[in-house]
Image (tube, rainbow, N blue to C red):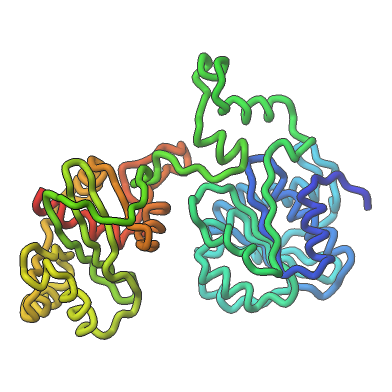
Amino acid sequence: MKIKGTINLARIDESHKEGYRGIVLVGGTRSSKTVSAIQWILLYCMQHTGKEIVIGRDSLVNLRRTVLKDFNALCYGLNGMPPMFPNMHFNKQEMSVNFNGNTIIFIGMKDDAMRVHGLACDIFFINEAINIPKVTFDNLEQRCREFWIADCNPSEPDSYIYKLDKRDNVKQFRSSYLDNPFLTLPQVNKIESYQQNEYNDAQGTTDKRKWTIYGKGEVYKGKEIIFHKWDTYTDEPEGYDYVFYGLDWGFNDAFACIKLIISDKDLYIKEIIYGNEIEDFSWVIDTLMQEELLKEQKTYIVCDTSEPRSIITLQKAGLPAMKTKKGAGSILDGIRKVNSYNLHVHVDSKNVQDEFNNYKFKIDERTETILDVPVDKHNHACDAIRYPLITFL
């Protein structure tokens, strides 16, 4: 069978033939990532029998309006595509297809997480894999017998998906609309309308975020990143106005204790403790006691209010611990206060740097409007930084 394909189809086929475990396709809108993955799966099914294939996305609602629509277009010849398999029967109740003795299952991975965790397959394809938790990906991969494909728009600054190609058995490729020769002129014009130039500025269509992500297929760290302006430092300032410590409790979530040095409009940030499953609380106390200002009770550890007994334990050990102020709007107030400073993160505080790269505001999926609602992820150190500022300053 002869079909029209892009470079992404060739990349998938070559990676599979060369024995790679998986391939990650990162790219902008209309770069043919999803269509190429479906084309390859259909061609694979023509050459094999008795295989189990899983095609998934975060939810069935999103799967139906994207992946399944492309699947139907390829099979039945919709949206100007030539039909590959017009007689294929799709079982809507089971959300599956039997084709040439192979079974293709469509699944919303967050809708039925327990099913995913026990789902064995020969091939799987995850669309917009950035929206799938790593634990779900790992559970699916460990039951996958042969090969997998993951695609995504680079809408997250630091997803685990981008790091999969550190493994020597995984390939990653980036693509953009320029890699898809089958786009219509209106489609190309719309994508290129986001690029900043004199004409687009006059038309009011310029959008730096959309051009970076959907046009160029690159990661954009913009206004949705809450703390996006910061640098690193090595030596603490000689003089300062205040020193505080902030503490955010955690066990399965990260336990974070952060030192803050405030000098005029500069805020110096250094992690003292950061980690999961810290069981030895006496070690926490001993570590904090090594901080001279805390040992001599010349400043405060401002703590999250969720564990009052732990605060009392710190106080009984001789540490100047107190609870933070909380209330309606305190998170946004704290974020504004942090952002009012010139931010400097210690070069060794890798967890703080990681949080700063990933802590972001929610984006309305329908309008792509940035909302004044922080995503409750990558924020343990960020919360610890807020507490002293909203309490004292």
